[in-house]
Amino acid sequence: MKVSVLGCGRWGSFLAWYNNRLGNNVISFGPENDYSYQILKNTGRNEYVRFDESIKVSCDLDEALNHAEIVIISISSQGLRGFASEIAKRDIKNKKFVLCMKGIEETTGKRLSEVAIESGIPKENVAVWAGPGHIQEFTKNVPNCMVIDSYNEELTKFLADSFKSDLIRFYYGNDIIGTEVGAATKNIMGIVAGVLDGLNYVTLKGPLMARGAREVARLIKALGGNELSAYGLCHLGDYETTLFSLHSHNRKWGEAYVLGQPFDKLAEGVATARAVSKLAHKLKVDMPLTEAVNEMITKKIHPKDLLITLFERDAKNEFK
Image (cartoon, rainbow, N blue to C red; front, top):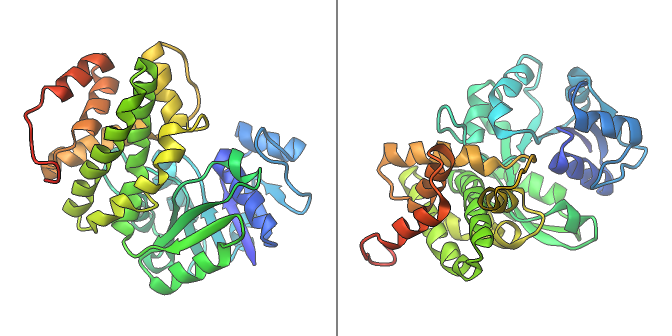
């Protein structure tokens, strides 16, 4: 099978490596002036993976798209609209697209599949890949479980069956709203976890897992999805990888924020917190943890003060 992975960052490089491991014919694409692309092009490796020589690294988008039966996109979520619009200018009607980023578009509150479709990629050909997993573990042959979801049951099953291996067990998703929202919002909870680490309040991660999943379930339901998705692989199932792992960029960002330390890697939860906070207000969904992260980012309120505010909220029934 011919696969092109668009994006040479941490996850994109893993996806190219993984598809090559499956025996697929792989092109790894990145913009010519992108540092991640240059490293892979010049050395065939980065800090996470070493590419087999059969993987072609290219900065030619036309070449990558013409090559592929399946196109995997792994870029910054906030850059998807412009990139997808460029892709849609080409003949792509027979190609399957898999979005492997986790986020909500900040300017519109749209899910990433919605952004791709609005940009011109056919709805019936759009899927998402979500769930727990760190490249640092996968490359040590530590297995995990993930989920593929789409608007098309046949496409979901085809992709999940095509990508499965002894390294990743895939499940068929059947709630693309819940899968995308759950995957995006777990990065917000990752920031909260990092804040708790920075404050040395680690025992609060248990309540964070329970209450975080609950507020995300409310949002999924308000958007028309199945609230049970919040307790699946896309969200709660990804918590260990995000809330406790030393590899999580979002957790690291939250910890660095509290400790006043610089952190220069991409943490998608920052933009997602802003986007989801707006969405929650619009839909009148109570999301106190998300709102606290947003206020920490936008209003520079100290996390300990926000925690006190959360504890001062009126008592309520646990599952409302």
